[in-house]
Image (cartoon, rainbow, N blue to C red):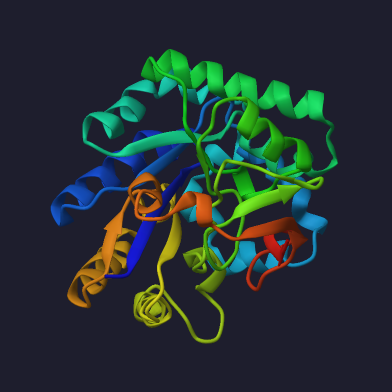
Length: 299
């Protein structure tokens, strides 16, 4: 039976306070489990506005109604309003995900800072950012994190190497077609990558006639190709105004016999030692501005 691994990125304070509980209710109703990856430090979402000159960014903002999904207050964090500390202010809903039987892990410390900077930063900077997130996760959950999923699908070589050193045992940091072991600087690393294989709602809605009314059917067609998939959703979207879309997806996947589960449970079905080796790099994908981490050529 093909598997859909559900990876939920939680980027903001609002997404943690409002989107996470909504998703917990929805997943409970469908009796499905997912992996929640948390942003654990300051919410500086407003600083994303400096991406306005990035090719494709304005078009994406116009297509996906960013203000309605994130809220005006969130879009001012880090600029006109101070960025609230998500981990300090929203530890309870984070812990509730684990209490409800879901997997939890690290998305980032400062989402905007990582997404906009990590590609150009060195190993020391990368280590500090990862360690801040690891320490805060430990404070909240009482145990170290084992799963990492990079903010904005942004990585550098040091980040892959540090995942192995800092105790992560599973990662979903980029986009690709199938699970693999990353090869970085000539080294095959032991932390398997389960890349996102399906497009996200914000990449699809507003393109080629797709809307909130029909995008679920489109995604169902893409996911019913006989292969396993990793689907990334966002607490701010599928836990908010696009919850009905996710509801239809869960119904549709169940109807066609696809099994929805966590990244860890999916990984447990694989022979990790026999995974193919692939280089990692940067590239672009349809519907998303800028470049992001991609599964590269076989090594």
